[in-house]
Length: 126
Image 1 (spheres, rainbow, N blue to C red):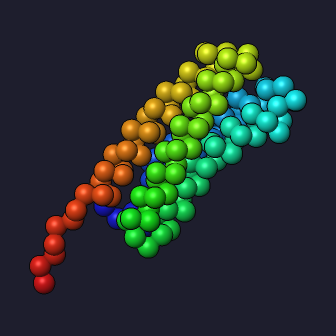
Image 2: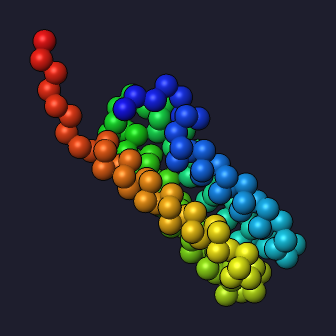
Image 3: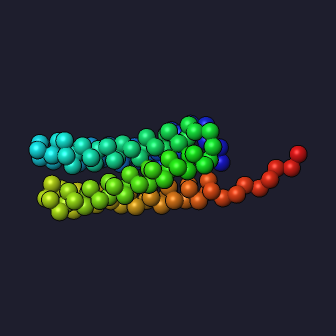
């Protein structure tokens, strides 16, 4: 599967939607968290599509896999931060439910993508 542009990747498109959702959610956090949890969550959310885009621009599947792994790590970080925001009372569970579900789906998509990239390709006969 050769994709010409990272914007064509469904996982990138959906992770951009997640980042927008996190920006909207954190807009309602206390001002005192502007440089705390708000900033951390936004950075983690932006990191997911950014790593997908950067990895796509690399010259090898191995390099791309490294960036997809970093995107997956950012999803885990964001999931933790969402859970913390609920525990601290900055957000209600219902507000975070869709984002948490999207994180799970994006993690599955990234895992499938990583599996496909790491699968040995058949030799091409000349």
